Image (cartoon, rainbow, N blue to C red; front, top):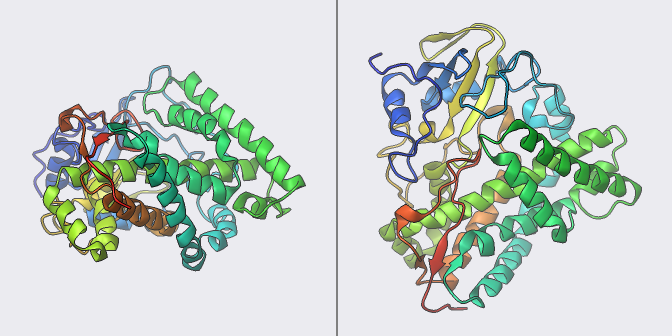
Length: 408
């Protein structure tokens, strides 16, 4: 194995290979050393994992902990106003993404019934209706429009609000706060304020649901006496954030990617049956939820390297999903590819709970958008599209688009 690539100091984040591709330094690193040491901004000597096999193995290995309260989790980029941590972060009740078993299992098990394939299938028609209604609204507008604001964000927000029983009219408040919370180098006090505003709102909501439950996921959870209000709030925060941030960015960035690959777009226009596979390929190709962290609870051998106990390990799902050892010609967007096996929903016990929901929303969203707006195109040069390089979930801040006519 060649070790000629220098050890990175901090995580390479510059999208210098184009809006859809991993930073060049990350691609070079994966070729040379898929499990690579990395010096963190605070001086911590941790690791960066970019290879598909190593990443899959790591995510299935319980010795790599997701907890933030075991040891210090070091950040791979600078955060203004954030002092270097001197002690572990406290565990947030209900936030099972940052837990290991058995705590993770106990909380997640309460949600599996709400997200079964069967439940999602029953919801599918309703989701298609939500998409169609939003497309009706969009078609009434005079182009150019911002596709993020008019379509990509409202669709998953409407769906998750309805599933959780969050009043849709409250969405602007939680979207503003979740956007603030997702900024990478957000000053600490602003991040805490945004998180506080969201959890205060959600704590009031779940308290109301405990007193007067309705027909929604949060009410189902609130009926369970063994969950505290704090745990309910943490679960609500996680589902609300994950339920609209990721899918919204996939719909917008996916549309951008298709408009930039007209031959792939033409293939989808010609054959709607390609859509389920195309959604998997867009998930692989774009990997909007890219960077995750683990904490090594002991010395662990991975990909020919020894990761020392107490190390922070950063993983890049985007790099792994572009690994030529797993996917042929991985940097090409190919809607006919069999992209199953991609890691965009993670792997192991933390694999995304809402993945079936996300797939249904994306199939319905892209299918509807292509059918209703066959002449959709960017309303500005591609290089002027504002990329979310400053956010924890990648995508575009806005996507100005135009069209000449719409169809039913």
